[in-house]
Image 1 (tube, rainbow, N blue to C red):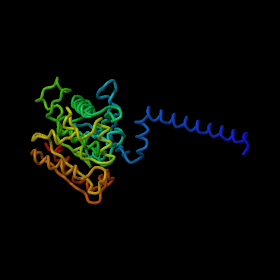
Image 2: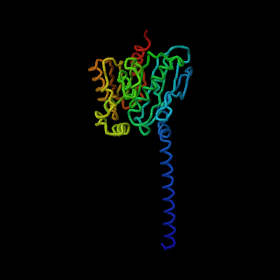
Image 3: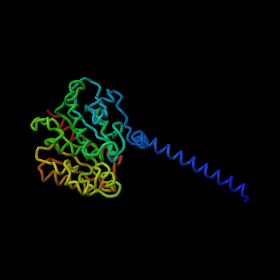
Image 4: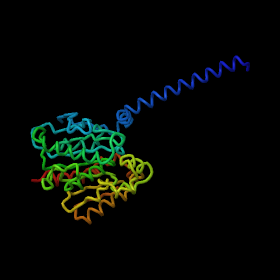
Length: 315
């Protein structure tokens, strides 16, 4: 190869490499500024439920402003006039992806049965570190109670429900109903303003220090430190640390073949509930994996409905 040809080839190769580098840089910048939208889009149709045709839908209702960011939720009601018990849904996504549009079909189906549903956005772990998520969801529950007359919600019949990371957050809400943090310094301890009537937790972490692999990495990103150091923090992220006998009943569901969040996480939470004198139901399902779509099947949902109705459909 002559020197002229070699020089031309080398120049072309350098130009191609520069172009590739530019494209990668632009993609990285685009991802950084649009992480939430891109990550949610990648979730596909798995978390896009069919909304009942008769449902009344109210989207993007602002429930709080946190560090200058507006936080929003969506409300679905059965469509008729009434005072409906409320399910507060907390989405999954390892605390770092998905949003309030990502709802399990089994949860959405409860709207047809006479439940209102509020699906809540909270800060993802690359946006805010723990305990921002806990305080935000508590603020959402306060907002829902305060505004319950406008949306046909019964503020005394609220069940919080979540899967995986959302199940962890639901457990934290259930366990901290009687807890006053510095964030709540202006509130009375006796008003039970953050209390709910029940918790449903699907394949949920309960002790972040005992997770492994990718789940541990996600927990570390949420906390901003190593989970083993949880005990030294002002607001630990382990619901077991807050349980007391006045906490609401829990319904816990976990797949035996879950290789992301070990079934021992739910077993440990159930043991802690028993020790604290809190009613709890634990169901371990053979053959089910993490966030198994079969959680929405009749095999699981029949017992979930019984739990819900026992808390909310009886006077």
